[in-house]
Amino acid sequence: MGLLLPACRNGKKGFGKITMEIISALKESGLVGLGGAGFPTWQKWQAVKNSPEVKRFVICNLSEGEPGVFKDEYILQNHLPELIAGISLAKETVGAQRAYVFLNDKYRKYLPKIIKAVKDKKIEVFIDTGRYLCGEETTLLQTMEGKLRQPRQKPPYPTETGLYGYPTLINNAETLYRAYLISQGETEMKRFYSISGDVIDHKRVVKEKVGAKIKEVILPRYLDKINFVRISGPSGFFARHEDFEQIVSGTGAVEIYGKNRRIIEGLIDSMVFLKNESCGKCTPCREGSYRITELLNKLITTASLWDRKEILELISVIAKTAGDSSFCPLGLSIARPVNSATENFKQELIGE
Ligand SMILES: Cc1cc2nc3c(=O)[nH]c(=O)nc-3n(C[C@H](O)[C@H](O)[C@H](O)COP(=O)(O)O)c2cc1C
Ligand code: SF4
Image (tube, rainbow, N blue to C red; front, side, top):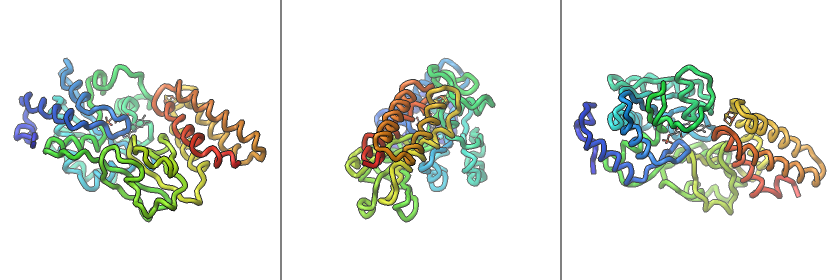
């Protein structure tokens, strides 16, 4: 099943049937966004393609600002032609006039290679500072439009009202790369997992099936050395041995920490990151991440077991409030690391 027919390869328009076939192939493949949210890819492509607006855009999200996630950089290093083919495919399929690569400044060293690869393809590169929140699709749009780097209300979604108000397809780099492989007949649904942490020799990217379990992406020789793992970066969750049957969700990042590392370190690291990346627009996230960080540090220095239990309860209440009432997914994610740590590592946290 090779769907990338000549009309698509040379970039000419007027191949409605083929674009429908590509969207059907994406639907059949079950491809979901690999930037964290996991939204069905074909639905976004179809929404932009069917828009009544003539002007449309495609954006490849190469912001990758979350610690522990480096799979998109791996694609830049090893699969750039396929990634650019994926962007071109998306552009032609949805009928966009122009596509952009939203590139994290830390990947500036790849710029000459990217510029060479996108020559004559109506694909431009937009380099950003690389703040984590700027990878969130509406903040990304604000950034590209030169506006305040804060999220927008959704709906309307970018597929409807995106860049400069026009329908915009925003996909993660790996999603576009995989979409291209699907158009070429790839049927095996695999994805890249970023594996790092202080237990392993050096960080690496592994290719495994979509929905792989934690234990399936960690080499067996490391299993006995682990105290905890962090899944999907600071906005993700903490897991112990007993949880290794769980699926590696979100951005597919697995950070592995050894027996000499304490869960409180991991939790403080997650919370400091979220606190620093919070844009400050809404109180539950701005104040919540700040207070939780403060309380976690207090937990370390508090002698009384009774007080430590109270501190932990207060942390859970604040995290729940942030998780229930923040404006955007960054604030909503505050509860995830806190809940997983307090539920799975309660004894270690209160030092009973
Ligand atoms: C705080 C935050 C940061 C994000 N950073 C990225 C990022 O660096 N790269 C990315 O592809 N998606 C990121 N996302 C998800 C995007 O908002 C969006 O869902 C994604 O780019 C859509 O592409 P996909 O459907 O292919 O996953 C982030 C979301 C949030 C809430
Ligand atoms: S949840 Fe956090 S990052 Fe999102 S808008 Fe509110 S303050 Fe900003």
